[in-house]
Length: 98
Image (spheres, rainbow, N blue to C red):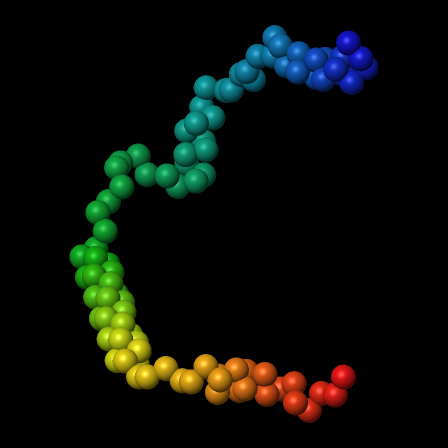
């Protein structure tokens, strides 16, 4: 074994025999009191929250349908001539003289 492998083995074996730190008896109660965690199950959410989520989803779906319908209408227009598209695309090169 070379020096590096020995160091790796020593590092990996350094945690052998480690034990958990003991906690005091009332530590969980103190943490729970500080954090303000309820002892009961979580309460149900308001119905208004669910209605607002449902309204948001409905609005999102309606907006998606509107955009999809508009893009479908615009895609029916005839395509431009490829030569015209190329001349428009490379028109910025005309003022440049190499």
